[in-house]
Length: 212
Image 1 (cartoon, rainbow, N blue to C red):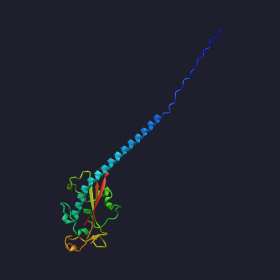
Image 2 (image 1 turned 45 degrees about the horizontal axis):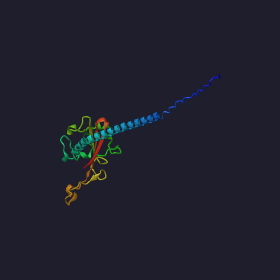
Image 3 (image 1 turned 90 degrees about the horizontal axis):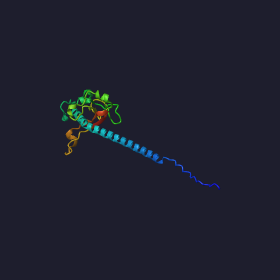
Image 4 (image 1 turned 45 degrees about the vertical axis):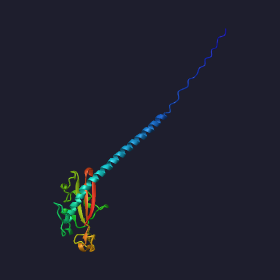
């Protein structure tokens, strides 16, 4: 009897396919993109808050700056008198009066904005003898400091002359035909008032006005 041959077919199992990690790679890219977008959003919000804060500080400085210009006008002109403001007479206007932050000449050292050298730094501005009276403005915060400086737009002290000062003849009543005869023939110089307002968080604002 012949032995029975049994054929056994062995089927080799297919090995598992290697995982390439494409989905993980894409997920990582998406996470990085979302992180960058979140950082950009945070920076944008911070920048917006800083700009809004600066605008708020700037708007808060306008009121005391305007009040300071009124004080300077009261010191120059008797018809704009404010109580407790020392009036500078016509004779005194021909010479420096440092006690009132008044100079009968244009000071040297101003920057490109026209800010005088004495007001460019907070230390020198706060050292000026004439400071803004906080009692004249209820809106002036306790951490706000205001200083103004008056300059006569002349090259030197003394009597104002066309060669020395920036002069303009006073205007008469525009409704009559006499012109400047009502206001005289003497020309008057310009006065430049520069105000520095130091507010919270080391903010500084400058306001200028030309008076005559």
